[in-house]
Length: 208
Image (cartoon, rainbow, N blue to C red):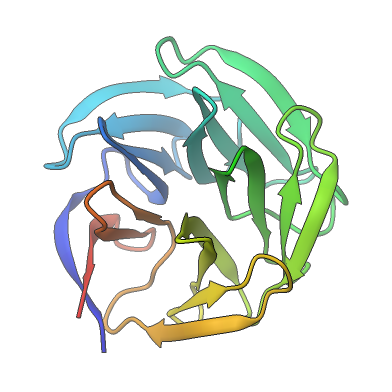
């Protein structure tokens, strides 16, 4: 069963989302509601405050950083990564019902995990308009990324990672993580899978 090799602690008090890039890992913190960029040894390269509350997911794409505000109504905020300036606030479909725990820009679209609705939604990144959704097979969806045309999303409660067909949500494969409660989930340019545990503020690599 895969385990997590802890690499460092989160740059803030409670890391709850990850998005890996060649420059480092973007980390969102659900307690101080800040976004951080850290290198692969955990050194903070930059950080900025956000208007989000219970900042629970982060993504990088289309030249911008995206953060998920997990309070009602649910919003996604878009930021300039160089300055931290908030460029846009996008209200999610059914904003008082589903919550939001994770997000990522995948093939130019905004994918969000909606734990209260048990779905993953594909949204227009400019307007937030829904384009597609797939069912989530677990209980509490959290981090999300794409690999080889497959949507990968973890369940924090079950400690399970699902590989899902983006067209219909069919489970392609799944595995459990031992000894770690996965919240954020991402894959770096070298193919390593990273996760964070918001209860311990640890960030590490999934192995095995």
